[in-house]
Amino acid sequence: MIGEELLSDVAMSNTVSDLKIFDAIMSSVMDPYDENTNPNGVFNLGVSVNKLQEKMLLEKLNSINEINKQDLDYCDPSGANLLKEQIARLINQRFHAHKPVSKEDMIVVNGCSSGIDMITSSVCNPGDGVLLATPYYSAYMGDVNLRAKADLYGVPVPIEEVQRPSQVQYYENVYSDMIDKKIKPKMLVICNPNNPLGKCYSKEAIEALLVFANERKLFVLMDEIYGLSVYRNNESSENGDEVYPFKSILSWENLSDFIDPSLIIVSHGMSKDFCLNGFRVGWIISPWNKRLMNALKSISPFSYQATLINSISTKFLQDEEFINELLDAVPRNLLGAYEKTTKYLKDHNIEYIPAQAGHFLWVNFKQQMLTWKNKNLKDGEQKVSSINEITFDDEIDMWIDTIKNGRAYYAPGAIFQSSEPGWIRIIFSQPWDALVVGLDRVINYLPSS
Ligand SMILES: Cc1ncc(COP(=O)(O)O)c(C=O)c1O
Image (cartoon, rainbow, N blue to C red; front, side, top):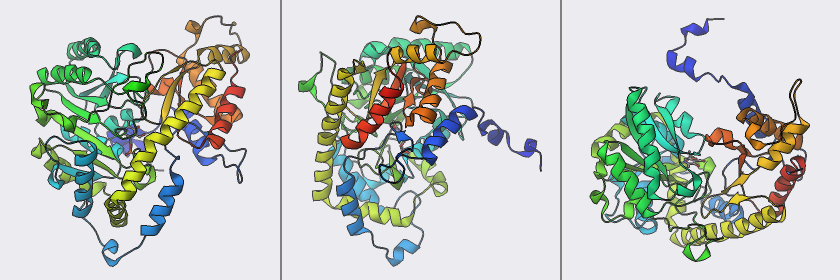
């Protein structure tokens, strides 16, 4: 076999080194639970999909799934014109764009992951730094690094401050460290609403982050992929938690009071708010930076979606009545699922961070982890009495054990760069009859005592 040293440095640095984590994820993907055909399969509480509107989506999509002769051909790699027009209409309406967005202000990409990879390679040189509050959506690490070779620098923002302007102090610390280490900070990512915490930022918090970025000439990627999946508002605050309305950055009248808008890039798409992860349709919008949009367009031929998906997505978004129905159902159904799931957690004395958007809950599993550890001591290990003695390695081992033997897959806090072991993220956007099977599996396999 030809020596692997012949591969590029980029390819070599991308070969998976932590097979333990990779194998665990693959085992759940390859053997998925199905009530009828695979009841012993692994129940997925880990991947962020919204299955609550499946029926209405399938009916609609089956009614418009027709192949025409133009679908046999190439289309514009940055997205077909008709599709961009529909996206622009939708964004202007739903994100209340202050200055109406047009098809020239966007490119369509094959999912936001791909978009973030393209954005990073357009604004960062290899080795440049991207700042992002922890815990963060785990795939960002690969999105900025696998091809663009930029590095993520997690900013440990305490959960109580994640919606507040005071968080800027933590960004300042990480930024200074990077400068001391001669790393060039180039971009800041704000995931609003936040994955994995399910919270919207206050406008004041975003203003403070924009001022911070502007003073240092950092690009700001506003990942607004859960923007239309906000299910709790100011009136429904739970035990006094802070609940803010989602305000897209595109709606800000006074954006230039805080930042040069040409530093702002917005990403959104069909995976979350439209429940169509498998379509691989996302979009990147920047009405303020034509040069950046041109740079993105120039690399779009490497990663565009099939013409057929452009056509189906266009027909899908064109049906305003259906889209209104869907976008009413999404938050309503998420709220129902959130209420059932949080009641279940309370009934089992499990703490969680109240959420208001997205498909997930950040859940405290410290007690379960302590119990699991003491039942699974390795040779020579002593019993542990405090969560402070538990490590991220323990957390990963418990996770792998739960997939293999408990037959349920959740996401461990370690992969989100959580600042302490003991937190997990569970996805609740599934019909209750199914969801409860997965929750029971985790709770029964990982008792608290
Ligand atoms: C915060 C966030 N950004 C981006 C993505 C990527 O989405 P896409 O399916 O459009 O690649 C996800 C998917 O889970 C996400 O949670």
